[in-house]
Image (cartoon, rainbow over all chains, first blue to last red; front, side, top):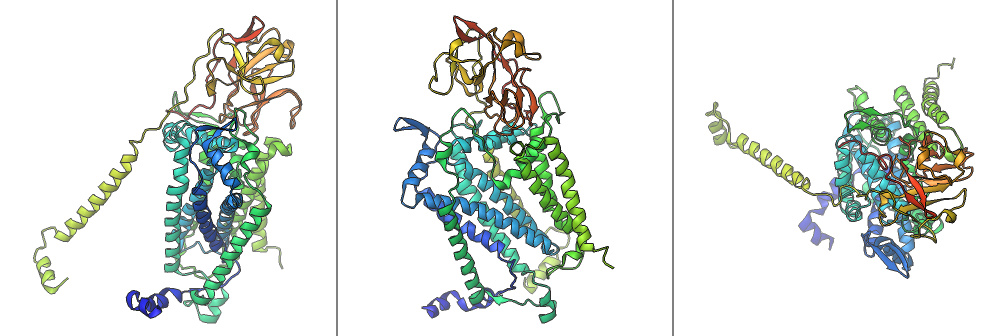
Length: 407
Length: 207
């Protein structure tokens, strides 16, 4: 059988070229794989859900109760023998994918693996990350329960707040003033066609560039095999079995979480009503929510009689945009000509590393600000924390790396 | 490229090479096709550009929007002091017409509340659509978080509106106070005395 295929497809060549690709080994090199496998599980569970989900916000009457058709289809999915657990796995896989992406980015950043020659792949990774967040956001809207409608409506209003073009953009992407009757079918299309296609293409590109440029590897490998060679295990059979192990562990973890931790129970919030439930965005959007709460309502720069830069656009678009752009441009702040192919100790990038820690603290502080009212912290205190804590984090990290007090 | 081709090409130094022209043409065709494809998306028209709202006129009766009494006309006795409810103008139940009506003591209202829009019984009404991101505000007659007095509260970003001072913003990111709805009492029923005194909900960043 193998010979028959080899004669026609030249499998030997493929085997030599790709299956023997060398993977350096390090305990932190698996975050990207976990994100990738979460994506695979998202696609598989997503296909299962597509068999029963109805993308329509039209109101149906079931047993005397009125609800959107999509909401009712989710109730039916929940009643299927495996429906509920597959839904929960899908939801947790989305969280795990974004968490793994963040850890992967942090690993690449703190080991200097984003520097020359891997600037392009850092940018591709940022696009991938943005697409994953958009997929999470559009996925949120699909049950069309009270939570979905509020969360998606806020997304509409943020887009709507952009001066001059915002109104047209928001109406284009949400197919009218959300919740218009055409909004849910459109969001559904983004979630199951456009974003998965773009994600697949971006993941493919990310991996192709990685294969072409090869992995960065632990610095001690340099002493063992020299600076130009890679020390590691071949894709087949060692790395494949490791990957299989990671894949099965990821799947097991997700089913474990889905069985014990219910998530987005549509019946808890119920179909949309006139009242707005107390909701918070998912943890990975909580930092933007925090910024929106921090920006004073008085920050308003009029541009013309009908247009202005208002606090909504500053908090929802401009500030997050600046933060994400700075992260995306990180590799271009380094003007080195040398190729970085081995993990760099943080002492080589004291300022970059300290900034990285400061950004992480900033994200945490902003996320806490999302719970400012519940924690009874006045907003002006949050404003001070948001500025001061990242600076303190920067200084402490810098001092730890530089060790100026060591005799 | 064969030896013959190379000779042919070098013999014609002044003219543009066929290969270059073809490459250019492929580029132009590719760009044109992509732009054309993208432009076709520009012809997609959104379904509803703006949510319509019928103007509230003097004499429109207010009805409960939620609860057991939904769609019943609100009378003076159906809402005791300290209570509030979501309401609609009867027959004009458009989302942007959602009203928050509450009952307090008349003496507690102060400027900038438009006092002539508050009834002598102590009823006042505001738009229930938050001016920040369009969520529905709620009536909190009692303490909540650090606010130890009756207030209107938006659950989305925790904006707090002062009910006795023209719904001005006390906390949170809301940029404007809630528009007030003039109301009066006629035949023991709460009726509108005109339309809201300002634009409803969040304003688009510009057109």
